[in-house]
Length: 137
Image (cartoon, rainbow, N blue to C red):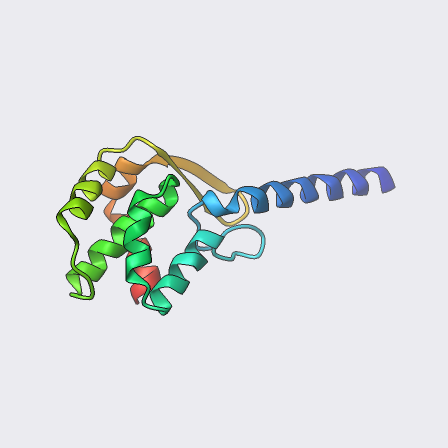
């Protein structure tokens, strides 16, 4: 019995560690056992709260697909609300990202994990609305 308990404890610890290690690269509003947003969601929330819109637009050029996704949907929403103006080069970058096949890891809860191509994620009305609703409602 003690051996089984130790094995289960080890498995839970490894799972929790690996989730924390890659958390910065995962899109998730309610991840892990605690159902908390990932650090990239917290990062964008902080940028919005502090009205650091230039920093959000700068993340259109990030090497991290999750940041690209959030930068696109949030920048477009901010432009629609007339909080920012997107330059020609930023609009061209957004068009490039709409064609990107980079994978965006997504988590939900402690068991759901999926990778979706950025172009498909940006075309998904449900996922785009979820992202903007989280930050703007």
